[in-house]
Image (cartoon, rainbow, N blue to C red; front, side, top):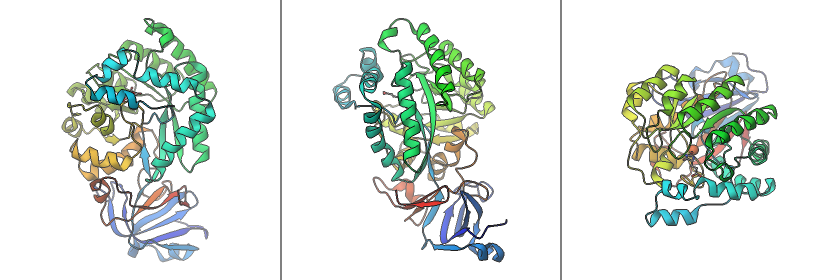
Length: 410
Ligand code: DI6
Ligand code: FE
């Protein structure tokens, strides 16, 4: 409880701490104060309970004028680094073509692969920064970015390097995920197993370059089988890298059970998740990442089994899935609203899904809640109650973001 003289006190706010030791809902502290010391929170609690000794050590005092404070938002599943768009495919889908049909006809992910391979790192950076800035404008302080639109060593390296560069260019933490097993590139047509061998080679090389924080795969009828996914996971395990999985998005392929077997950080999408899949996730402590943007944009009708996830005690995170094909979305606040309206999450569950549970989905235990010792990543909002963050559509009530203890006007 020692604060150095350089500590900063934020007072006259309410805090949705998402801290379970406060309560199991928002962890709401109505008249709160936060003490920031360096990159960390030194104290969080009711203003009236702030120890006088700590209060006196704060050399800077900031009146939050009644703002709501939440943890910095975490977008734990994005494909943010890519080139081009798929607006023409959107038109085709509106005329009746399905996402799967387009993918099988050589469009879909592979068309973004063509554009991404052709783009220079500089151009890729320019296009990706626009999306990142849109996320940051809504209070995002940690973003996961997957590769998977290169599908060849040099192109995957280019994308992961751009992702690292983005992290150095903006006040945000970027977590890199290698998704080499995203789709079959045309040069491996009919040779999926050979491509997986190439994925393993890419993984080793990119990991040696320090570009990989986690490993993902698209386990699906139009993606890779569980046997192929297992090979990728075994390689990740040998390198001590955590795994996650695009699982049961379009069909029940048994991906969640496989991912759980490897202690996956998360399984993502999950519209077709079975009861046994949910139980396997619970046993493994795997987070369910729901992606309402993809559900909405693909006009899916099969809802993810939210009740089963709740009953099994599987933590639920939410993310934009920012990608050009199934979720061209750069608003995590919109995902809060959609998760409540489409998936019937409570606003408290939704907010936990972009903070506490999103942090777990990335294996980051130093953030996602407001509590002493956690990182001083937080957002001040011009709202009276946390449910307002989920309730509005298209509003952005962010006042300011603090990233690692630094006040920013991003
Ligand atoms: N599932 C998705 O929703 C994204 N990737 C995946 O495996 C979509 C990628 C795309 O259509 O470009
Ligand atoms: Fe995705």
